[in-house]
Image (cartoon, rainbow, N blue to C red):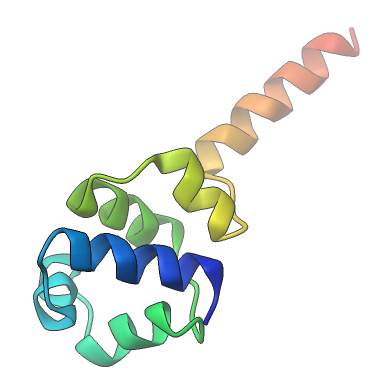
Length: 86
């Protein structure tokens, strides 16, 4: 199980949601939800954002555990990088 999967499972349990209910709220299958929690799948940025909103998670922590960066953060970093080079 990945750290991200453990984090999601713990957060889901703290909210009192079943895997099936969380999967329904995310518009994914219960099997895909199980794969996320077991660390077999890392969801897309969009699904991570939905997990953050649904489970009321810290966005930075969630993305860090998933070893991903939101595209908007990459875009901001890119702009800042090119500003510094001028």
